[in-house]
Length: 294
Length: 193
Image (cartoon, rainbow over the protein chains, first blue to last red):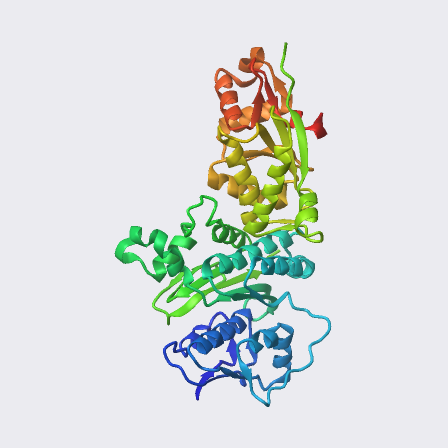
């Protein structure tokens, strides 16, 4: 059995460590080993789900071993990881979930996105929770909850309209005391659909000629607002998310195929473009919104 | 004999959502939702008179308006009713498009090269979307005066005033009577008369 080791601390910064271990052409049993896990953000959780789904579709029945620290398992459960993972992984007989607390501090639990009503559900659900976190914790104006909801709506619709496959969304706020000295809210969206390159290929590949690839496709969507739809009104979602995240001095990155493109604020050391990454299906979007500096 | 001035029809988007889509959801998100709301608005417009009228599309009870819905409702309504073969002679005003919904509406209008008259409770009526500075200034002057007769155009707007008003009327941002009198759309909506 192949074992995929999940790092002790697993978030958007080292998510490639997971993708590097995924071999889409190699069927056979695979175990996702989370036992050493001590910290994971929504990007890490959705990355594990996406990688598990890829492994399942490659012909293996992926198994998962839970973190050996009960509080980490409890946190994963509060984030909705247990339910989502149950659709992807086989849990070992020794897997022990802690009973979920009745009240949740989670901004948005892991939510599958397959149809438009899921987007409505996400927006409805986040309204009651996001207001307090955005205003009290991040110091954003009261109207920010609407803009935050619009961002969520648009990134979720990106799955439905472009991936052609189901995906997930999740969000949570954290205190990045040591890393940034501020609180942040993190939104993660992931799917294992056709990705940006395939989505745009029929409509736009010819104009880019030999340059066409994952990087060009991401640049076309991210920087130029191109979309596969001929309608003038399409392709605004990512553009407008970029503007709003920029107003909040946030980070926005999209990984698709073998490339990642990003708007990086001054507090981030992430490069604006990464290429020749390990190919991975679909698209993974990461948004980090930092607390406002007073 | 002067022609009667356009009547106005107010359409409460919140009521459409409550009645036809989701009673407890004041959120306009996703393109299918936007298309359904636009269809309901057009159904209301079909029932109106054939003569020119002003339609006040009221977003007061809407909490979230995403870019997809703003495009499907605001931009596509304007595109359809700008065309010569439009089904009704409608001029649109959009209500409760302030700071919260203004970003979505402004962006979709710019994307299409359109402009629209919008208002919010705080700032009153304003133009959103793609307009030149001259168009905006002329529109603001008319908005303040509510009406400018043909004899007063040059005084109010300068020597190019008539051209500007004609352009604004073509873009359906003001109403012009056959005798050249220009009227602000806000002056024609029922709630402001």
